[in-house]
Picture 1 (tube, helix red, strand yellow):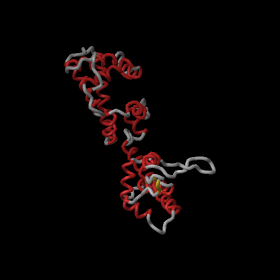
Picture 2: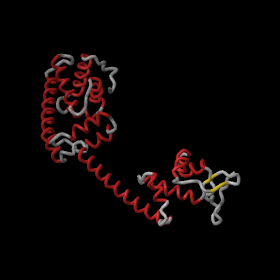
Picture 3: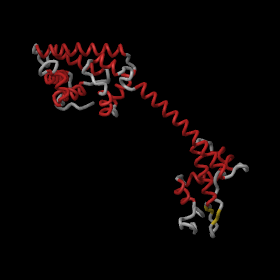
Length: 275
């Protein structure tokens, strides 16, 4: 039988005469850990019940909490034993020392967070281009905020991870070359639609592959993924407006061209999934 006495001032249970199981639950460690610490002399239950069972006193619980802080700070258990058993250090002295070490650790962690923030900034897609450079390269209609919008939408995907890695390594000159190639592709797509190029023809399939290669500069785009992207060309007003501004009806025609090319490469456009 164990007992938990009450504080005479407020009636709350005092941390005294606690069993190993109760102590483990209280401080958030396992019973096995307490047994191990007992064997090392780190924290030993010093009280006993009327039946002779060893239990943890209030002083033992206080020592446990001090040990937990030192462990959290990264001290080896043997070093913690030496620190706690130092004859010239009081309980208040331990707390003062732990507070100082915690503040040092917080400072180091804050420095690490700052370093990670700088790395994130340095590798953020598009960060090598200033907003002005983005508009100069991609045209007056380009909105630099589109990268943030895309990240919010797809930032957790593997494809966004590929894009982020590749985009971070690109120089302004790389982006200029991509912009020029994309503009040339758009001109050829518009011309194909204007001249009545039939989806599924060799020439139309070649344009579809150029379009897929353009997407694959950012992430590996399979034919199935290409189909999923093309569905948006008629389902999302922004895409429709973008392509139809180049040539009336281009968005739907491009979708049909991509569908036909995917089917020629063994992908059923009606059942294709993002994979």
